[in-house]
Image (cartoon, rainbow, N blue to C red; front, side):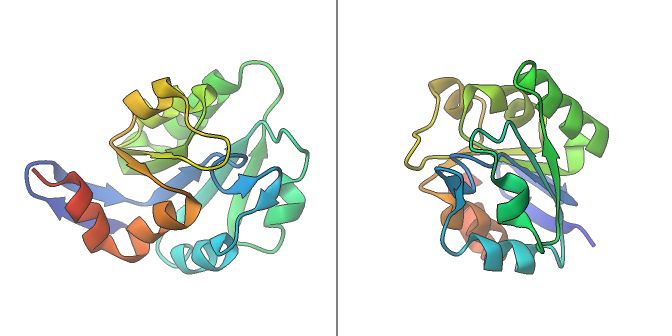
Length: 157
């Protein structure tokens, strides 16, 4: 069942899927950030969760093992295009996207809701410009869907 948000001055969101980058978004230096696993577990009750990653540290599959997420590790070249293709195949109008890097820009822009996550890696200015909202870390990003009044407060006009 999709999550539905009616946001004054922004519009209505019907989200069925969450697409996330891994390193810099859900993980720091290849290690899943504190609190992320529990939040992904809870979110999977209402959202289909996908992680699309270049997997800089080669740890994504192991870090996410046992969690209700689909993991797609991308080749080193063409990551931006592959991430966009993943969101396009899932139906961008029903996707929320979390990302922080330049290779996340196209998928952030294409999604119904793009959220830039700033953490230890920082956030590329292009990713910020392509996003609807900027949050301080993965816990805050995932909590937007668990505590929807935060999303409402950040996006309403």
